[in-house]
Length: 154
Image (cartoon, rainbow, N blue to C red; front, side):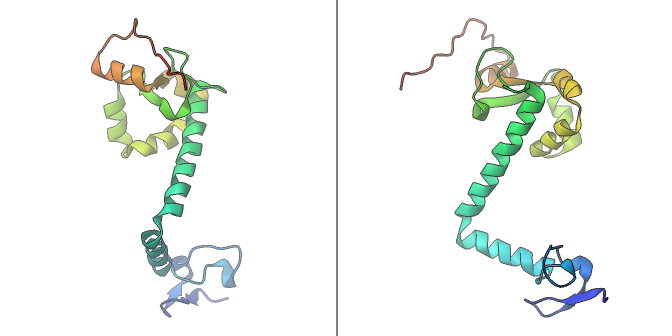
């Protein structure tokens, strides 16, 4: 078996590690090399970005839901009030060490991976879930103990 393959797009003969793995195809590799495939995908996203945006959002909300359940249990809700709408729940660093955490981890989105690697017990000691209102109030140092959340009748 050879350790090279010819790209169907650019025609170059490249080492197998320059091709993404695939369940189908010759040598279980994609037909296009990584460089050509990335260029092709970028072109598709440019001419029709909506499917990619939808898929990204779907992945993000599934991933966020997994993290919320890891911290908040089966029915995650704000640690202060009974608010439980997942789209408006945020992760709060209990010890106010978010800046240090972000500096260590890098991008804010990577914190989800860090949290999921922790045990649920450890995650609940370091993080809590807060609704947008209580998270913003904590960040700004505003006392919202007497503030009521009123939902509009639809």
